[in-house]
Image (cartoon, rainbow, N blue to C red; front, side, top):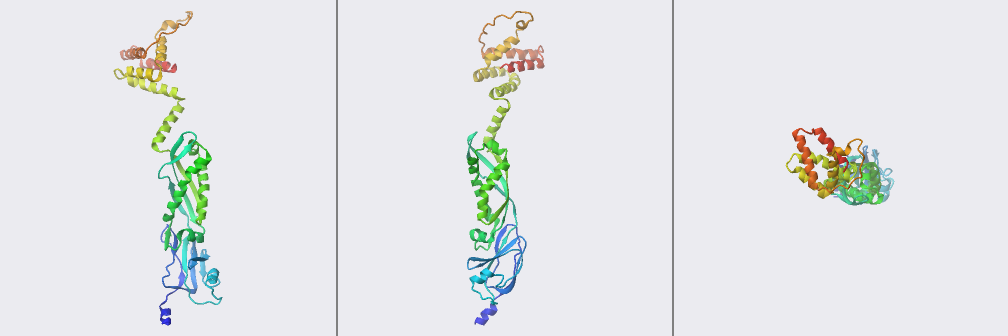
Length: 344
């Protein structure tokens, strides 16, 4: 009976792995009821490593090359099994292959905005995304901490953990750096270096090397970005007063095209910005040429009588009426408008 069992056994004399996809990181050689022939050939291709595991304990590790399996080339396994140096019988052992090729163009990003405390804006939510690349360097550590006894383990199963860890450190980076969002967004390279330093120990603890890490974008959610754009626009115009002047200048020609439009505009300016009297005073001077006749002695300036926003609007409507009748040209109207706005 023992002889029949021996005859039925299959003996392995060639052990190798031909990778058939780009995602598998660990693959267990199919042993079933087979045993490895003493002196068998182990072929480990470039960008691969092989590990012998005896009853759950990692034994010998092989790098690229062709290896003849004997008690001399399997010293740890020989010790674990208490083999004699003259051992020549077949043996059983689990053999795992590991791919050490780089995993390129791995994407990370924030599925939802991350809330941070910013020096300029207070509490804000931001998004960030980029790419990274890594490869396996320590198959023993990877086997004991990640892949274990699984028949096949792919990078897709691992990347969720890697990606979530990266995103989890974003808020820490902002909090520890104290750099405002605006400055951080304009210097993505430095942000990437800081974030890489945070996550690299995690890769090493899995037996991996982080080859590259890049931040491609740091941004605010759309609604917050729109508010930031408005603030930038105000600052570019020289502040709120200049921004208001610009908006008023843009609105006057449009309002003048509609009956009652200037009245509504003037009332809005008077109520919202308190500029009605300033416009009226400037317009009054423009419509009184005698005040600027050469040679006339300047008289003591009498305080101007208060003029309501309605009076200002009426003056503007009259000026626009003169343009309509051809008394004033559009260029003269535009020049007077610019002059008045400059005195606001």
